[in-house]
Length: 316
Image (tube, rainbow, N blue to C red; front, side, top):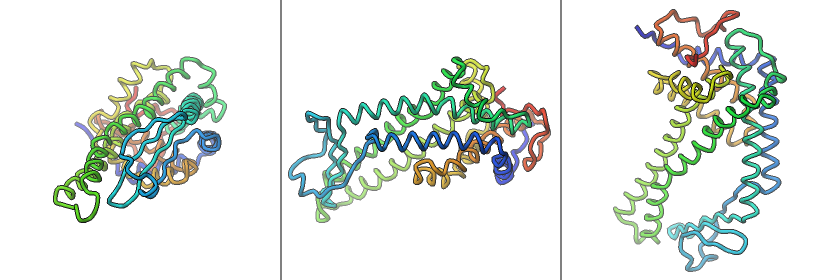
């Protein structure tokens, strides 16, 4: 018989207790420090895309669309109703820098993140956590390095591309809305339906993207819990670790949503708190889910596991 999970508050309380461990704080500081440094460097060297809102008068009769020039291209989106234009200019040089920096960030942060989270798992299990040196070993071991890159690519680029694809219907409805509603005098019931539909679809796309990330996230936790697994084992057992509790896990991740927004607003600086808090919380959830599926006794979520405990969130 499947047992119930501990209260969400208790699991998050245990995560807060574990994240204050000195080794946890050390690996998190290194991870977030490198992450913020790379993000800042990409911004300073022009490897990010920027957009702006300009007056419609500056663009005359230019219609919405993609326009190429000698240096790159620009995406123009007219909003006659507000007399503004949303413009996203991209140069080929900027596109190249974005690609290079994205690759560098992936290759540097992937093993470092998995190494840090391996330490999180060890602390949760009550085992010895190797600290920063053990995290850096993910760079030196080719098998672990390659698996880390594949998993992180899926969770970053893969999920983001899926999210962009999911927003296309809402963008199209917004395009129809602004095309058919050039002024308030032209605002009709159809305009209202288009506007509401586009907004609903945009929100649905955000929720879908977050849900997809939550579905795939246990794969990361599985790999850092068991670096010896092959990629096939990692994906199979990682996805299975949330079986029967995917909805609850999605809700658990949603409880961190304000922290995730705070991380975005601070360009990742708040991850010094958010990364260990949310990661340890997710690991504890999956560990309790494994116990609940097995119908075994439930360890108090407010106490760390005893020394030598092998709980791994069902990613065995």
